[in-house]
Length: 161
Image (cartoon, rainbow, N blue to C red; front, side):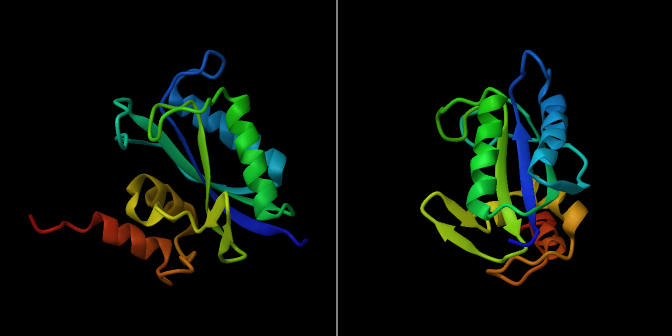
């Protein structure tokens, strides 16, 4: 398989005894992602409010990885990396040491039992779209044909009360 580009979102909102605070965990994970191929771009790390029951602030970022791995192999490696950083199965949207998601892929769409590319909920999440647009503003969502820049603008527009 030729090299493909993957846009991967990173998030953390729990301390780790080795890596420290969520921001440091995200930065360490960005380094670890080089094991999958070449990290060609890294967004700044931002702080964001949690979704669901978690009360802890998240650190979020995005990277672009160029890799010869297929989407299912990338997903398996991301899950392995999450476990290596101490992630355990927990409640949905609960606190987590590390969360890694494939958001977009240069191959377009992928639908498998455990994998959907583009990530189904990314369009509504400023904590994903913001960092992603900072490094891949012209990448298009294959479902809406909107660029990440356009999606970021839509999320930042004031809404009527």
